[in-house]
Length: 216
Image (cartoon, rainbow, N blue to C red; front, side):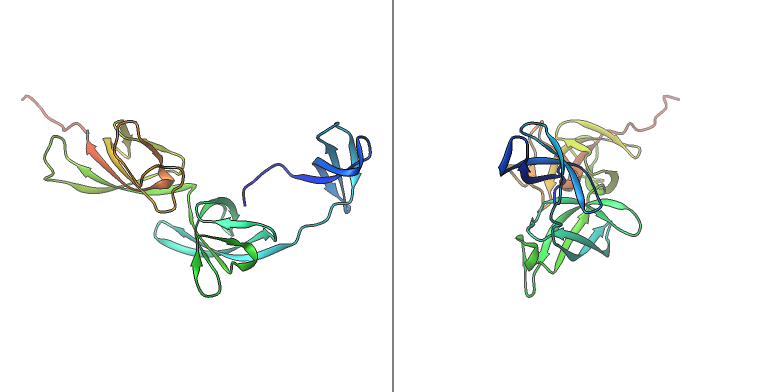
C-alpha cells in the first residue's frame, strides 16, 4: 500500500515490439492511457488492464478513540504490520499505520489482501506522546506525567533538550511502540539515540523549565 509513480509493463513499438518493457503512465482516459517507454523515451497510447481491487474495512485508532473507514486495495497487495498508507475518510485524508490484520478467525502480522477481513491501524500524521517527567536534579520526588501533541515525524533525541507546550525538558529515554520498525532495541537510552514521535510509546525526560524566583 505504498505510493509509487504509476508504471506499466507493455510492449514498445519503437524499441521492443515483442517484449514488454517498463513504461511510465502519463495520462489515462477513454479507456486508453498515454505511456512513455523508460528504455527509449518513445510515447504512445495503449489499452491498460484495470487492476481488480478489494474493499476492506479499516479501523483507525486516534487519541484513544476509534472509527471505521474503507479502503480499496489492489488484489495482489501483501499487507504487513508497520506499513503506512493514506486513508481517505469522511473527515479528512490521513496517514495511518497498520497495527494488526484480522483474518476470519485470528489476527496476524502479514497477509495477502485476499485473506484479510479488517485492517487495524492508528493515525500517525499527528500523534499524542505520553511522557514521564522527572524534576530537576537527581530526585524522583515530584515525578509527573505529561502529554505532547506533535507531528508524527517529529524527532526526539536522547540527550537533547526540547521545548514543547511550555515545557523545557531533556530526553533521557525512549520506549518504542510494538509496531515501530527500523530500530535495534525497544528502549533507547544512549546519547544520540533518536526516534520519530509516531514510533514512541513513552518518553522519559528531565524537567529543565526554569523556576520563577526573585532576590527581593
